[in-house]
Image (cartoon, rainbow, N blue to C red; front, side, top):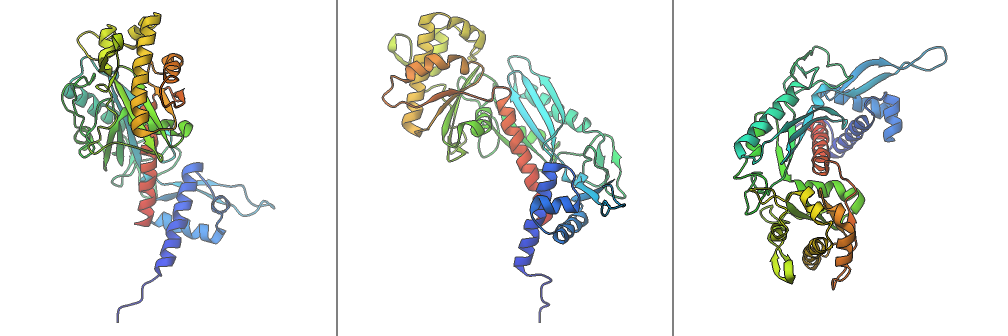
Length: 399
């Protein structure tokens, strides 16, 4: 006869849910006593104590060495607990025409280190790959005080390593990476794809391959407009279209809180969508800016400063607004969003004339400027990296 299992599936489930609540409470508050954990999670003190014991045995929670005041009528001395160094870190990276920006995050959501590597114009896959690798290397080196001696662990600020472990300079590899790229991204492979009139890279780039040796786990890559739309969800809701108007042109449609990426991940590439151009002719959207003479020399990229200067003229402002409104009409017809959000370097600047032009469409929709203006794509990638890192830590407890 087979021996009876040590615990029932229902008990294992209860323990797993309890451990998750304890871990997520520590992620929010950095350090808590058993009593504080019980109050924060709504579980009993003995149950909180058992969870802390299990998580310590798994190397996920550590005693910080700090104690609460006790004695002389102030109750028992309590120990503070925090996530152990084994929680690890994650990378959030932005690949944009101006350069590579990378951040190293811990499970508390803090940015441990940040780096920026400029890119020359025109960028090439080899130069971007080199800058991306350099950014990842510099973040690993900047993760001082470094990594615990156990493989895959990393020391967290203010949290000592577990007994018997020591921090060493140089840091450990992050557990995962999330990359935002200012180019179309193949959904299956994570490779950047060159499409006609893509203003940034010439050729293909494989961020997953470049970062494979710099992170211990998965590398997730998506288009910068999709990440910016995810970051805007807090303000725009669950059903909207994010229209990116900058050096390049892009759109992300959000339905039910999820970004529509398309079969290959190339949804929202609007540069060649037909719209109203000079003289009322139907032209690809990107050609409107060629007609205005506001492309960067030798490139299909739009020069935002030159465009805004041109729009000081009423006729050019009217032309741009009509062209954007034509794109909005197509988005509304196909996706039926509840809101259009204008983002990118010059999107919010054309809000008023675009609203006026959209008001004349057969189907109107509210048009607003993006709320998040500073590094919206990196903000979206950063939040996803944090969510994935925290999910990995919770999975460690269940595994």
